[in-house]
Amino acid sequence: MVRDPGDMSSGQGSGEWEGRERNAGPAPLRRAVGVLEDHPPPGPFRPAFWRSPLRGPWLTAVFALVLLVGITVVFLTGLVSYAAYNPDLPGNDTKPDKGLLGFYLFAWPTRPVWLYRLNQGVHVTLGLVLIPVLLGKLWSVLPKLFTWPPLRSPAQALERVSLLLLVGGALFTFVTGVLNTQYWYVFPGSFYTLHFYGAWVFMAAFALHVGLKFGRMRQALRSRRLRDELRTDTAATVPEPPDPDGLVSPAPDRPSMSRRGALGLVGAGALTMLAVTVGQSIGGPLRKTALLAPRGQDPGPGPNGFQVNKTAAAAGVEPQQTGDGWRLELSGGAGARSLSREDLLGMPQHTAHLPIACVEGWSTANQAWTGVRLRDLAGLAGVPEASSVFVESLEEGGAFGQARLRGNQVADGDSLLALRVNGADLSLDHGYPARVIVPANPGVHNTKWVTRMTFQA
Ligand SMILES: Nc1nc2c(c(=O)[nH]1)N[C@H]1C(S)=C(S)[C@@H](COP(=O)(O)O)O[C@H]1N2
Ligand SMILES: [Mo]
Image (tube, rainbow, N blue to C red; front, side, top):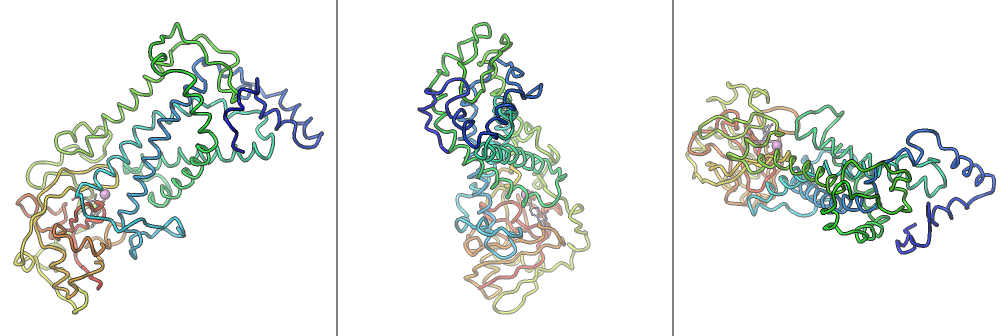
């Protein structure tokens, strides 16, 4: 089905390819298709309905190239983000029926400490920046969604199903992603599951689409020069020559905007998205510029004055649970230990400068965390070479109250059960009496209000 772009020149009008398709099949079917073709319903099914003189293969190809590069990066950072959860460890990935898609790539490293922060900043920020480009691309191919007759041949039917999965998958994946960064859980079920499967459907259709259209995109890009287009004003803007895909209007209006203007509009939209989100990944004073970031812009003053994801009250953690009666229950090979906060403060203390980086794209600058090394706790539990540790929170239920960390994360000297931050006791909202902080760990695995740690040999 892949058509050599080179043969495009041999067809004319709707193209040799479509002509061949139309003539396939038994005679009565051919006639029926012919009749339908000659009598499109009024409105968008008639090519002359689409009158913008800007639509054409070159403009579409420019958007397509940006999306090809951008969406590939967003997909890869999405996969890396998945790997960062150590989804192969029991309990970390509870999605049902993931089968082959549940593969993981590697044991997630702890260095460089900003690895997850960078990955997630790129994933979320680039995803948002691409939205105006995606809308521009969809606008540029809108007439194709109204092809008449809607079903002409089995091959065309297949192509249209793939387009449905492509457009539907793109909208679904982007919308669930945006809603999640806004903490707006209007979709049914878990964001994680929906975004994960939606992305795979989208990527399968995307790969097929790229395979089918790459040659045509390259050819279209060569048909004009960006530099010339950027010098052409509205008055001098003329439609592209008729194309076999029917993107160019057969009855173009006078231009009200140049191609330069259209690219500028989309580019300005993308830059605006960048400007109002990137601050949340950089943190510090720039966080105030992240107008699209949810949660308060002002985390308050003092050593604990950095962003809180979920407060103790929201997590249902009561002050009396975190008072003098609190104990850390340690277990592993050599039986159980129960430690008070005083006991933990009496152990060797270590300080590490680490960020909190959330899957939703926001992160804090490095904070100075102080507490007990996880590997010291592993030793105390009688499992010095632990292969993993299961961490549980006072917070009950939900995906946030527990996490399993791998042996390489336990072994890192900067992996802590933190008791203090920036020289002060942890605030209740940052996880007092004790929280996990591990370099390069996804924020959600830095469990707050820890109550139990179970080490495996
Ligand atoms: N028990 C518990 N731990 C938790 C959470 C939670 O909701 N409950 N949120 C996690 C998430 S998603 C992030 S990003 C970090 C945020 O830490 P902070 O609120 O101290 O900035 O804590 C993690 N630890
Ligand atoms: Mo998070």
